[in-house]
Image: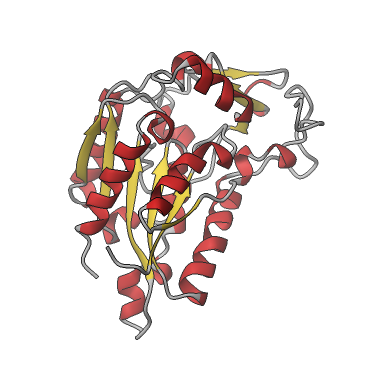
Length: 277
């Protein structure tokens, strides 16, 4: 394993980044520097919810509107600039759930390792590893990818909206059932208070990182939020356009960073070890 490799985790919607700390620490125990920046779309301090300790999801949007995919992307690019431009680090992006959008959008050609090598520079993004993540096609948004094309709006059973409906903030309904299956009650009670909320992501993906970077996908076999069959369809559809993903499987629900932490790390390291500088 290259000592200059760093991992940047793009967390899912509705999450405080602290929920991914077990994964960060497990990677660090293997000598891998890992970072999970808080993404604005899930940052209660940016969503006008009043007291973030006891958020009120019925308040109106902030005066400038809710953060969107652009702001999440900028948060990822900020840490990429630190690691790549300032430290010449090689970076593996790890994307979970809705973080698949920010990871793909932020993996711009100019911060990819091969592009930097062509300019005589070292460091850069070497790959993207997705797990239980939304794969958004180029020119689409999360909204257009997962909503019916006939204009109907379908709300998944795990998502609930509040006073302002789909123009406001969504939160996870029954997270112990849909998000934390596989965790014991103590773990559920530990992590549930760290869940946040997010607006709908309407930002269009404009960066085709699938075409220029090797990609891997870990299918989560017990996922109740993004069922394995949907994960498989997303990967198959994108693979037809830009080439095959390296595929792994795990008998986990939607949160393997909590329920299968070491197995997730082992798979990430297996993929990373196969990357050629």
